Image 1 (cartoon, helix red, strand yellow):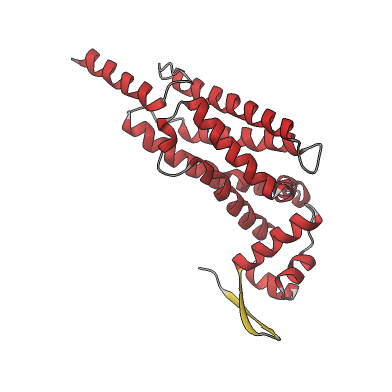
Image 2 (cartoon, helix red, strand yellow; image 1 turned 180 degrees about the vertical axis):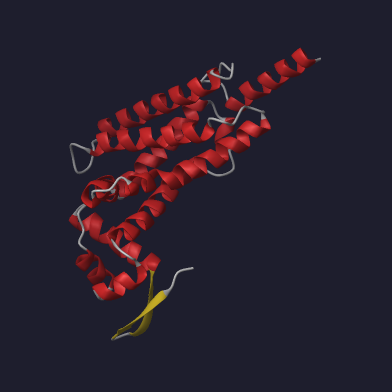
Length: 234
């Protein structure tokens, strides 16, 4: 539960929540770049820095909240109802990464901030926070699919973290050389992300004896696997 600060303005009294401060931080980062000061964030939120620290213990606490917000936005591209499983993997992944890229381009400096924050904090702990939310959600979705097939689920957490880690790394590469990548650079990122992620998923499936065609809906592949296993058991 978020606590709220009460700020008195000429217009009256307004409550400033953690969400409000995160929104202010994102505006500052969008405007000024990926190295925001807590003074600037407090000023943007309309509060003093001591009041900001009543909501966030330190810059790392704020970093984690921003990382959670952005990972939720990124994961939303994949949906939560598994409708993407009805499309061929290559088509589905391209759609996910197109939506993901569009979302990143709305706040490229925020992603740069999240990528740089572990270095600025001189700690590896925060770097884990960047992918923890997204990989946890991805693991939950993958596990529900695997249990329906069924597939062995023991390596899914590792697969999910590898997928998120790979995407974070190549997103940094995509954003590295310009404030806003060109359309050609974005198209290349989407192509590379699609093939890289499919390669990791394909490797996981092959270790379980499943050969999936990236141009055939994955549910079709799983249905054939189930039929084959039922026939072998009969």
